[in-house]
Length: 187
Image (cartoon, rainbow, N blue to C red; front, side, top):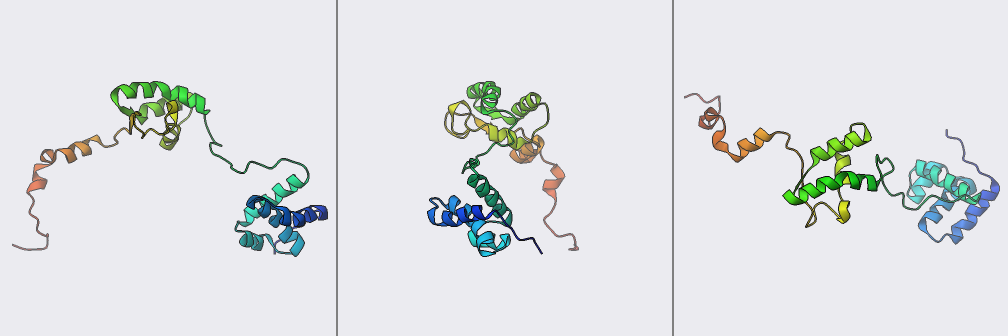
């Protein structure tokens, strides 16, 4: 059986008052995450079900509330992204700018050379998705798919397949002359 959560009684009193004074949903949930287990004896799992969060989130909300009650600043409401970035946005913009300049002349932006330059700059391999994510918003554009921005094309992985699809007459001649009969039918 899990241990009962317990906090200092003064923090619980602040949480009980916070239930009435909360101005935002996040403030209310933080107060509930403290008040329900300590004020009313509900376990963290059940508290999570009641406030629409997981047990882990309830524990995080409790830690945040206790830190706030002791005078520390709460984390931002919106976490935002790019917590695992390799470069700042400005560094990425400087890296990608020559490729955009070249692509604006030809109209096509190929990902492979950008990926090679990016990997060389950070000193390790990165997934293709990292490159795609760093492209939107470069050079003041909202997206590489908007007008005035070069079209984004990956390097083809199987160029011969594409040629064969475009020119079916170049396929294996025997394949086109096989009869459309099942193998088990005798003649």
